[in-house]
Amino acid sequence: SFPRFLINQNLPLFHITNPPYLYLGYIRKHKETQEHLKYFKGKNEGYQDLYQIAMINDLRNDIEDLIYIIPTNFLFGSAVSNKFRLDFLKYFRIDMMFIFETKMFDYTGTNVCIGFFKRKQKPKSENIEFNGVKIKNNERILEMAYILKPQFKYRAGSEFYEFLEEYKVQTPLKVNYYLLKKEVMSCKGEKKISVIDANKYESSQYRRTNLLVNISLKHSIESNILYVRTVDTGSFEGRVGLGIILDDFNVAGIYVSGNTYRTHPIQIFFEPEISHDEHGLLKDYFNFMLEAFREKLDSEFLTTYKYSNAKYTRKYLGLTQARKLIQTFPYKKLNYEYKKMLFNLIEKKDFDKIILFLETCKKEGN
Image 1 (tube, rainbow, N blue to C red):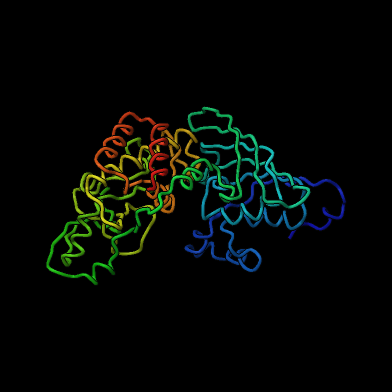
Image 2: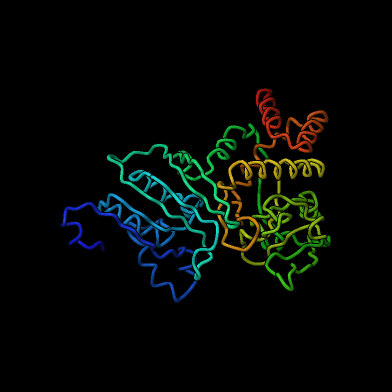
């Protein structure tokens, strides 16, 4: 609890601290940290990290000024931060932020930021605008201007989310993830199909195996040739995006024999079925648009994965983000001429004209 004698002084209080940050998912999985689960009960239910408990405690104790060293996923995180940002930033504005995309502490791989927070005169859900300084891992310094919007849960990179909302097609592709063991077991047959097992990573590669399935599941696997890589590897060839399973793994499918993990390569299944050529065009469109927004917004709409010595800050692409970007692909409008036009625009890396192309499809009814 907050020291009452400080509150009773009736003096301006600044709380300057580097609180513990430990993610709830980690706490649950490790016996040595499970004693901290008590902090996430009652009025704190729904929060996802110990630092959030510390900050919300200051909010409840009417502290006016906060200077906190906290994970950068306060700005960039999705599920890990959405509820907390909505609750906290109704009461506080951000005056300034220093963001470190380089290693600061010996005992954590988490990138951190220093945030300067000031309590609002009245609670209000409104845009929050502030300036930030970003220190990159190559010692490059960027000055950034941020606008956090409540309709996007105050997450940085709102321009990307505005694009997803603006250009979602009327009848988007339905996206399903994972080739699960229960589906394979319920569709046994005599048709052999080669897969990698996403749960068996051995000697720097996924174990290859053959499944015996019925003709319907074999067709479904072979008709859906794309997978999503959700975590940057650190190399420029291994950035998040869509890939072709056969090209990258030399098999037809990606099988999940155990638990699903969002950081594994994940096969994507589409409804309605689209051709292999359309899969290829979707891959190129998706990866180009994703990289264009990463360059434009310094990847701030993606969750920071963890610190590394890579030449760029490794990021995580959420499956919801991937689904929503796929849903801007106007597959129903892609006759031969439109396919050729979109392919050429991607080849030319013409972002602005692709936006105009999407506008045209939208006006025609996509």
